[in-house]
Length: 72
Image (cartoon, rainbow, N blue to C red; front, top):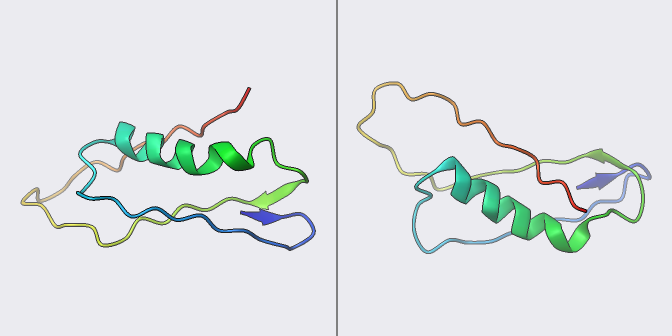
């Protein structure tokens, strides 16, 4: 998360197994964002990175749609 004043913070989590659904990804992202929301100052960039993904036998898969977590 990059704030409007160009400072930034990062959060990471390593799973024990591959994600099985978009919902699991959203829940993980939500758990990482919950402690920093609402943000103490304006946010100019919010990024999410997934790594060490396993290849499947699917020739072409649809891109997953993620819903941003909204606190409140």
